[in-house]
Each structure stands twice: as C-alpha cells, then as structure tokens.
Image (cartoon, rainbow, N blue to C red; front, side):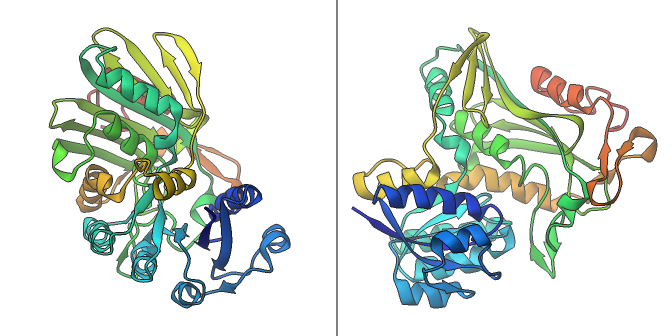
Length: 370
C-alpha cells in the first residue's frame, strides 16, 4: 500500500526525511503529497520535489492534500500547534524528538492522538536500532544478570554558529513559550530516552528520584554541560553525563553494568559491545516503523505514550534554577567568530567517569563543577 505523506519542516533536519521519502517513493511505499516550510525549498529539494504542493501554512496544506500521515520536523516550540493541526485533520503523526517542551504540551498531544484514535510516533531514532533491541533483550532475559546501573556519557563540541542558528537556539523559552534546547533535552535527548527504555521505565510514574547538575560555558539560558542521576521504580540507577564543550568530541555511549556482564551501546553507530566483543547491527527508521505499524500492526518504536519518563526529566530541568556559568579560569578557547569554540579541559574524562562510576560531577570532585 502506498501511503501519502506531508512533511512540515523541509529544511534543517527535515532534509533527512526528504532523502528517506525519496528512497521510499522509489519503492512505491509512500507518495509525498505536500511540503510545508516558512522558507522556499533549497536547490536540491526543489529539483526533486518542486512539483509537489508547497505552503507556509500546514493546516491549509493538510486540508488540500488529506494525507495518511504527516511528519513534523520543526523547532520544538512549534510541535504542539502543528501536532494539533495534523491530528485534527485525521492524519497519523510522526513527531520529531523531543516531542514537546513541557509536560502539559506532551500530555495534550498524547490525549488528542488517543481521542482521535491516531498513531503518534516520536522520532527517537536510537530506539529503532538493532543494537538497542539486542541489548534490551539481553537485559530482559537476564543475560547480564542484575543490572546495577546504567550510565551514559557524551562529549560533543558546538561552536558559536550553533547558538546563532535560530532565535530559539540555547533558550529555555522564547517570547513566553517553552523551548527546552538544553544538552540533556535536545542534542543528547536520545541518551536519556534510550536509557529509560532499556530499563523499561518509560512512564511518568516510573521515576522514583531525580537530580541534576546543570552547567554552561556560554551566555545561554540552558545547560551545555550536565549530569543527571535518577532512580527508577525498579531501583535502577541511571546517570547521564554530557557536554557540548569538549576539546576532543566523541560519540555517546550507554554503559549497562550487570552482575554477570557489561554492555556498551554506541547508539549513533548501531554498535553493541558485549563484554568487549563488538556487534554491528542495522536500523529501522521511525518512518519505516510507522509504515509497518499502519500496514502490518507492528509495535511502534516510540509511541508518544512511552515518552512520559523522558518528559518528566525535561519538566524537572525546566523547573530548576538557571544553569550555573562555569568560571572562566576553568575554560579554554579556540578560534573566533562563528567558528569559535569554548571547551573544558578534561571534561571528556569526567563524563566517562560518571558513566562508569554512576557518580555525579560533584561526587567526582570535578573542580569546575563544584
């Protein structure tokens, strides 16, 4: 069956969906019937999809095209109004992560999708990885023994241009509207959501205790260097230590500490390292999974209902005082202008130590964090 699709957000990350849609169109699995964006299509997108209906208003485009499903790949603070339009038009929804910048908005999208009896998939791509599925099975079947804890670490670097890319970049709110563009809730949201899913603790009430250390190296509203520690209702301790101020960037890793084994999930690479032995896996995208769900009844990788615990973390972060600015004497600078970077010497070792020891920055006595 060929499903009809509308894409809201054709630039930025939405270009990834355009490429996938082109591949799926070639296999006659989907048909793109409309594009929505505030800006004209770039040259490549126009060459391939310039003949399709285009509008700057999603509600008008939905009324014209009546698609089976719509993808919303737009800034976080636009997710609720655009999701309303999709669901009220009777279309299934693929909503890019994170689903919403507040608990109230997440709950409204969830409720509306249930009332309309429509599917709402959230684009946490890591949950479609074969490496994730294999690790989840190992945990569920006891192959790793009792899970003592799950530690996540990530060290990326972002330059000044990253925070100039949009008016909402690096902000908790914009014109009174929640945004939640912090390291834990946007760039490293996959780490948080995947760790919770591995523990089968995805509901709002599945978190028993939660604490954060939120720091920043720039004049922004949100955290760029953070440590989260929570305890789930199962008693599992989860830590997530990340930074966007690394001198030497590396891909994020989720470490599962079991009494009978240890596993490392490199979720951006679909790589599982089990007791030191690497396993390469494939991946099913959120869009492909949603199509399989609609046509064959396959379970959704990430139903919006399974984002409760993640949203509780996001809500907690939004409610904490503004992240503390790290003292200049702990920082180093590289480059200038839009390419300028600020980094914390040794932060790569700190985030890794947090994941290995399930400890916070303060417990590790990191001087820039105390």
